[in-house]
Image (cartoon, rainbow, N blue to C red):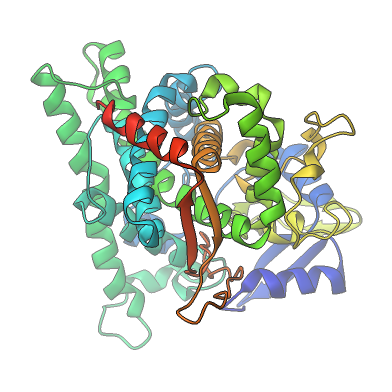
Length: 467
């Protein structure tokens, strides 16, 4: 199995061997789905048998992620957790977080105005600040805040540990019993630290949120709303709230950073897209105010920019692995029960038959000839957030976060190539880092206010800010 840029190798296999490719690693079957049709046929239409998760001993048993419903086997416990999560983050109620999202963007814009060279740090603080307020009602003000550093450490570990076929212990679970000093048991040493971080992520902020409630000081949040509705929750019910909150805290704080940094890079590389998006923003809000969620339907091109960002840089180049529950036959191929089945998300979202010129950034893909949104058939969210019944339960919250952040950045700043001391453009290009969660490699860019009026809008929005 490739250890670096694995999506490139898997996509090459797809071109050589077809939609469905089987790779056998030490006797374990890995099935890669390389087209949207194959992914839809199996993960969607046969979701009852393709929605399980493999055992994943490293993540679930050594790192201690067995509480995380993202890694749970498909069944009743998984359904209970997902139901609680969707009760607030699903399409019916996700709007309750809109005020928090708008306030968080105001602070991001102010930081961009003050120290634009630190934009990647600002994006990470923005993501952490937003998720901590939404999930726990806890404000954070520093990139070095322990809550943010723990979430990053956990997601970095998950990104490395969840790669299909990368760890012997996932192929042979009996190896988890080897002592850490045994040759080849390196994973036991790193898993010990990973487990400590996971335990802190799961319990520490939840304890703070509960103490704020007991003091009568809770800010509206996922945790406070659910615990108040339960009034006197049983231990099991409270544990589900705690664990759903930890999942949102960990996953939400990392994936949006990746997508927003990809957006910044796309604006550098495709200035004509930025100009067109800014023209649309100006036509709706002018220089009198910042965009809000109320403007979303009036800005189809900005919405299309958000969708194209999800496609252009795949945050999860391969979705989390599924496991087949029973033998199946697809297009004449027998797929045995127990096979690990993985959607090649990068390959699907860069298929030139579906997305012509896939490495170009073209929001027009999602608009019809009248400039109105027409994207359901090619919606990148159908693949970038996972597949079938295991699609990310926070997809609506994530897209809202991306849209309002992108819209307000476009309204207030010009994002261009950075210039070196000799007046030459500093090269910037998309280089995706390996892992289950992929970030663009760091790059430089120039971020300047579009005008004196937009600068004042940023300053005014931050001056009025109250958490």
